[in-house]
Length: 153
Image 1 (cartoon, helix red, strand yellow):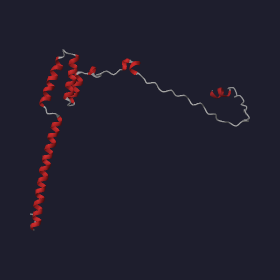
Image 2: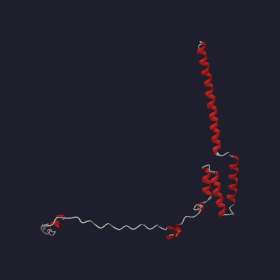
Image 3: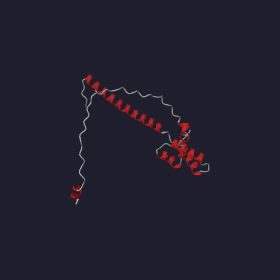
Image 4: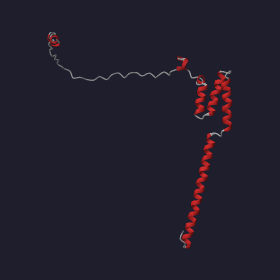
């Protein structure tokens, strides 16, 4: 059926070649350089005042949930700061006030993490020094035994 449709289509028109005689050589003419204007500075604040930066843009997302995320990460001071913002937004929030008191107590009892790290580093240093001193004593004993001609046992 498709063959019939194709065979019944109108024949293509004859195409006659067009031939022009070029009598002049082609020459390139310089184009005019576009004039460039200095760009005007954008004044975003004037055009769209709703896009101005606020002094403290994150105050509206201060929530107890965000504060607890900081607590879970061990960043107690940040959590207290977030809870204080929550209390400023909601002065009647007794749960947040209680939690701030708890966190301040925890912060006062716990040494800051950097102090704990310093303490561990000092302990490692003292252990390393003790090991090295024992090695030095053994080396001196071996050295004295060689000088005196005695063999170590």
